[in-house]
Each structure stands twice: as C-alpha cells, then as structure tokens.
Length: 252
Image 1 (tube, rainbow, N blue to C red):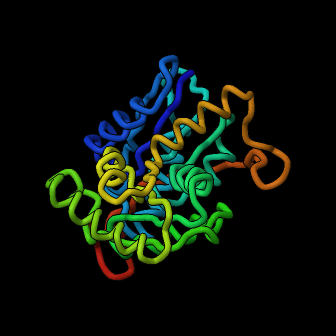
Image 2: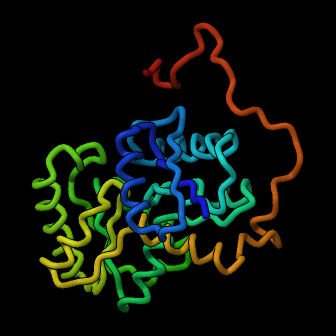
C-alpha cells in the first residue's frame, strides 16, 4: 500500500518531519511518500495562506507523477482544499483535522484542539463544522507559537503546548488533539504529563487511510464529490509587466 502525504506549505523540512511521523504510524506493508507544493506559503497561518495553500496542494496532486498511490493524506490542520481533493483524485482522501476529531470522539465525550496562533482558530472551527464533528469540540486553544517556531525550540514548544492544553482541559476537554502537523511527536509527553489521551492527526489519518484501502472503500461519486465537470481550467497565468502585487500595492 502506498500513501501520499501532502504538506500544506513549501517548507521541505516540515514535510520531512511529517513523513517521519506518518511512517511511525504506518503498518509494515505501507509506503509513505511526502509531497511538498512547488509554490504557496512557507507556513499556513491565516485565511490567505490557507486558500493559497489549498490551490497549491491541488496543483501538486494534479501534476503528481510518482508511483501510483492507494490513498492521500492531507497534512494541514484546518486548511482548505479537502473537498476539492476528493473531487480530483480517485483514491480515499483523509484530512488530518477530520481524522483526529473522529478518533477523539471515540475516546471521550468532548475534545480540545491545541494549535499554533489564535488566528487559526476560526479556520479549524469551520473545518470541524464542515466535517460534522464540531459539536463535540470543547475548545480550540492557541499556543502563541507560529508554525515555523515549533521546531526551533522544542522545550519552549512543549511548555507552551502544556499551558494551552491545560486551558482546553479546563474548558471541558477529555481528549486533546495536536492542532498542527508540525506538532507530531508531542503526543506521548503531553499524554503522560496531563493524564489525557492525545491524538496526533497525522498518525490518525494514516491509520484511517490504511483502513479504508483495506476495506476496499473510496470516495462516493454520488452527489457532492462527483468528478469535476469537463471544461477548460487555467492553472495560473503569468503576471503582466507592471501588473504585479495587490490592490494595496506590490508585495513579495
């Protein structure tokens, strides 16, 4: 079985960390291949980054020319693109946000998500709502750390995570979820120190993807996830001279 795991940003070091976590969770007969978008944000933090990331991931999967895969795991917590990818590819698609929440619901009545910056909370809440698991969420709590800060100082990351996790527990969470793919690996330490089950979305998504493939199940084409209508689609265009940037001026 081969699973393609897509990073939601262009930071290859993060892709490597995600792949290590995915391989640790995968069964012995599963091969994990990491996929880094060729363009997009270096980290996804906010609505603009998230929509840009979604288009970049779709483009990366559209142009993927590696060995055929049996499932796709989307390793961006709360990021957009999940529904579009399910239209695009012909194999099961498992998003780490949705996977973690579904498993958390099997472990306790209410769960809490510990994520990076507070600005990501709205996206995560919307993603959980779309997936139908928001009613069991006690809180989405930020650590105050950016995505690229997580690996810079592991001790600081653990301290910030534990503080945020305590607030989620106080809000009624009986299970905790790592709210960023870059947090993979923290679950064991946090579970021991707080005495609560901790779900890593990458591991959860990999195991659910394996289960879907083993059961011979894939995305339904009846209705919402029907194949895209045949039409011309332009995937990006060159910027005309003097026309770059945004309505507020040119930006890098």
